[in-house]
Image (tube, rainbow, N blue to C red; front, top):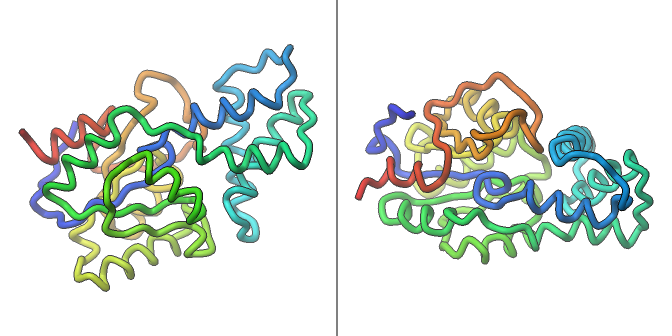
Length: 236
């Protein structure tokens, strides 16, 4: 499960969507509003198609996440016979504010906050993350968004910005543990850059990568939930 010395870390940094916020539930709920009623596409098919569309858009010139998410969901809908309007696309992109937090996210973060300083490194816009942050209900020490960086993970510039932000507060890279669900967006670049990382495997009971592309990253530790991670990092 894990073999980490948590005393070696001063700061925990988290991905948000997929790790703390249940983005797959949010994506599917938004998508189904623009899919034809007769669509037989499975949830796993829709999520995999979203992963491909989003990754392609994020690898291009920077655009705000509400535009990326809206266009990615619209592309999936069109592939299944949907005809989203311009207003639909805007609504799909803004649906991020409605995506629910995982049931264990708040309590886990509150528990971890008693021992560590906490940060977020998210592929999102400032305003959209602010809405998600209210769902999490925990004061964070640092927030680094894709909008601030002008790029999306797995671009290493996002992690460079994180190191700079925490370094300004006296936290060295070696004292940071990065926690995330996405092997592709987070663990692969984090480990290339020398971070230790813990995987919240939210899909441990399901096959496939869902809304994240596959990769061969190898995290330092794996947990099935935030609750399990918090229990390991801050024992009762």
